[in-house]
Image 1 (tube, rainbow, N blue to C red):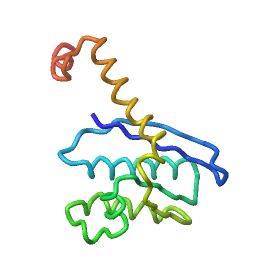
Image 2: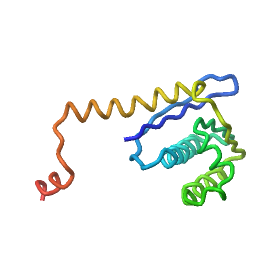
Image 3: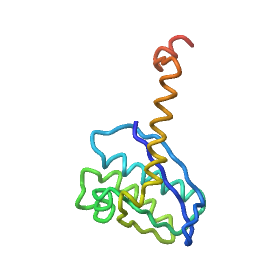
Image 4: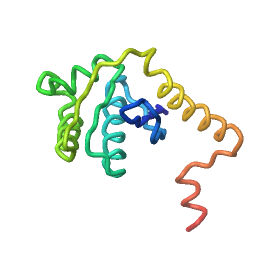
Length: 135
């Protein structure tokens, strides 16, 4: 499992909204990062926020959203991000340092630790087994 989080702040830096989510793991770090960007953009759009600045701390993700044509392997995700951008009055991606993005990172880590605790405290039953017993 991969955790993701976003925090919305106003022009004075006050936190307005925040949330976290879990994503399926991937063989690389960039894919879940781009999925998290898409999820954050859709969430912020659903809240009615029209002007968007996304601070990205993974340099490869920043490069990918800045120059999608140079990242053909991720075209499908980058095209979705581009479509989401068109729904905002303004959208901007900025490179952020890992240390200044530490609050969002801590929130995203808590997704995995909570999920892990739930899995350890509950008996695991596969979806197939559950489906077979209910039929």
